[in-house]
Image (tube, rainbow, N blue to C red; front, side, top):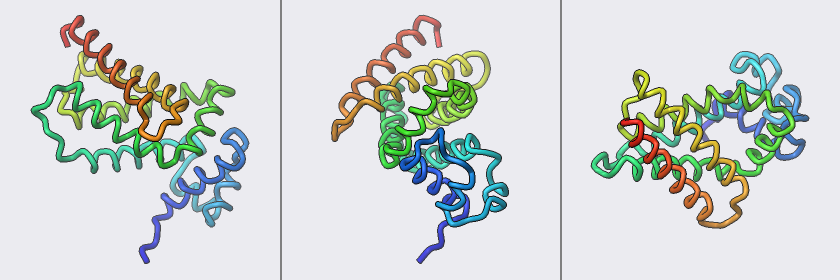
Length: 189
């Protein structure tokens, strides 16, 4: 049996306890108890709960990038982005209950949204890179910002999508990417 890395145990513990208590009520001690580690162990890897969420996001990015590494770069950019982001939503679906708790807590503490925004931008940068898009310079920043806005809108729709096949999420993503494509064309990106 392969031993789970400490960092993953902590992230999984945080997700698990978020399901039971609601993210806004979770303490670092709750996470330590759930993960079977000490507070000192958590501190070695993470600064706080927000940092644990950042670690979760990096883990999702890694899994997503591994899953899409052999993508066909000859297909249209909208199709490539759609495939990559749907892979991301498939991965998020595995932790749906915890993420609903976490994202619902953001409504009660808007500071969390602001603090999470740079991490979402970093993830969208990776999505664009995986799709073969240049993210450098002003145009790159505009692409990342536009995709981040689209992703947040679709993430909101994903929260309400209880369908087996995520059809509402797919429709929302298709529409959002279509809007990004039109805006990009308008801006000459």
